[in-house]
Length: 351
Image (tube, rainbow, N blue to C red; front, side, top):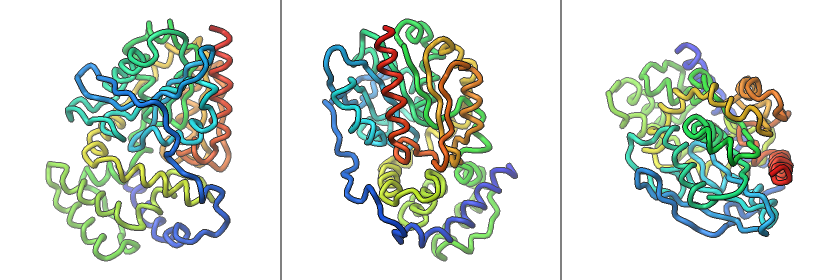
């Protein structure tokens, strides 16, 4: 818990100093005119095994093109793959969906919001939208964990149909000390830090939320909702999701996705992320071509997590990208796009 408190205290202390940098464009923004979230595929609705409706999109491609199924991360949606969709459309048949409770998908029963259920949701997406032929699976953050959950529950499907897998800024377990420290410490009601850097009204709300020690989730939800409405959210996201010097437009786009995720979803999935352990399930991918990558400035799933995944996939192409944070598919889009394309088209040839 001391480590979590330190993480939380560091976020609070450092974020206030970064608020000015968030507001001020110190250098030209190459994506200032980018129409984020505008790349659309053909819409579909997929019914999960518990009846929850999942919103999916398919980018069509020639019959000989490879099929790539792409999973997004926690509190994001399928638009987080904006650049990959833009660059690979027409070249690969891409299947993307909003994880339950995210984007346009239904939330489903609260007690079903687990990584194992996400693995079953992925199976439903594959069965409905990519029922035959070789597959390449790619997942970012929670999306990578979703792919691991699929392998854990459906190893035969992976062995029979998956010819390539990509793990982007993700983890196979042991997230408790590294992931969402502020959320964890707050939910435990044991965070003690100097909140002098916060606006006075927000500092008071934090204090009330922490001292209430109520058994439910209302204080934490209220706290996060208040943070969402301040510059603190922009600064905290930039600090925790990107490397130094990332364009503000990428940060704002990410914050828009985060803010669009319902608070119930944010809180429902936190326990399953912290309990996530699919290290052994990675063996299912042992003889499948793979890449594993993250940024060296990723503080949510740092390079140690990438190396741990790679230890189970000795033949995987492993890379740690200098200067990039957790949102590497936006910040170093060309790096991720190239790896997906190389993997998908190589897998297609092998199939």
